[in-house]
Length: 164
Length: 262
Image (cartoon, rainbow over all chains, first blue to last red; front, side):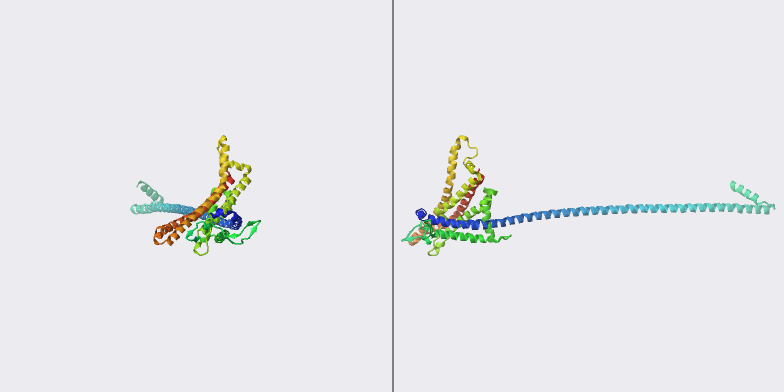
């Protein structure tokens, strides 16, 4: 077995070159390159984690925006409904008031007309008395030839009308 | 493969041959640049190129960057799962260990022998190499353990709820199992890689010797051996990855003992 047979003549050279080569690997690769590569991997992992977090946050933001939008739409709908109802109620009140005003006006006109009719009636009645008194005075003078005074005739008419 | 006189030596692949710098010395120790050193450098170069592909640091990774990040993430997660946040400081070491063993194992499995004159060499099939790696891991565990907990580190050897009369015995057993760790760590990898490569080489010898012995023998010996070789090659590729993983995993578990005690 050369590994053991040659060990005495080769161990110095083996150890020497091994230490040089392994030293180069350790300091040139293990100490110099490895940390940089690990840093790259770590930076990538961190970037991925950050991006995922940002995506999660964006998702939450989108959800929040949608919720806000929903709430706003609901509020607007409620406001619109309220405005419609208010407008309806206001127009109903206004219509009622107008009807009421028209009613009072009509009532006033009716009352006025009634008063005028009553006045006309009274006037007509008074006219009838006058005409009846005139007629009675004339009839009496024509029938009996007696001149009756105006007052006598009027009171007689009044008495006859009151009885009639 | 040294096919001299029809004899195939399955151990030849583990032979260390100096390529140049035979006379280089440091304090009397020969440090010739051997084929083993060459394959260590090849391993280093491959890992370097592979890792460079992951240095684009793009937010959206390409295929190559994703592959590199797959490897780094694998070790980072393992360290985090076994040690916790304090394990981050040791990720570079365990990652270097894992990549070096994995790539060295896989490079040793490459069919480079197809090109005449080239021989694949598995760095991790050498006890010297796996031993040094195991000793480095064990030393880190010891240094971290004593630096963090001082003499309290010895409480690692007394599991919770041990009855008082049992403490000396348990302490000895635990200490012993602790001290065996570097040996098991280094030997496991060394033996797994060596055994697999010997098996493959022996089967390859059967294939070639059977072919040389004529058509009848080739049908009986070479064909089944070749089919078996395909299966075992796939198994070996799996073992390459598993052994690298086991080495890194055990190192992280031992580090966990040192950092968090029990």
